[in-house]
Image (cartoon, rainbow, N blue to C red; front, side, top):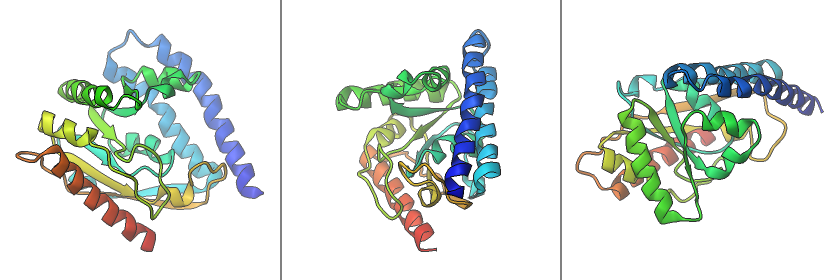
Length: 238
């Protein structure tokens, strides 16, 4: 009962903040992208702070020293909605997400999301979606943004693994940029489709960059998947 009450406070607070930041994101569209990004993502800073205050859920990051000096491709385990916010704080630089285009249709949330130049794909059209990831991803990287990929395509429960889709690896091969693998155990505290959140400290592990020179997209994806799944199993066991 208490957990549900805390979650209600959390969602109420971030919704109220969204009512402020969404109109703001539209008003500041004429500003340079990097400045707009800094302003709009303050909502994320508030959301994670408010999550800690209301639900007692915090996080620790291990391996920040592995982050490259220039924009790269992040392949991150996908267990909950938490990592879609937290990665924006963990990597303190402009970044874009590969996401399903339907998210941009959500009132308020989708409008603010659209202002951050995501790569919004139609997952029903695999060939077109992959081409879009490669073309737009190369463009975003060239203009100084990191590209964040959830290669399993959907959220999976802790201890489980989904099929790793090829888009991120194909982008890495085409752009000749390293892949940064990220594992975490957020699904233990913020389960898929769960309203209540468990208090505690989410553990995030950033792995050494996977260099892509001379590797195929399949090899890159397999190497990233092996590291992410190994670390994810260790987090579940530990």
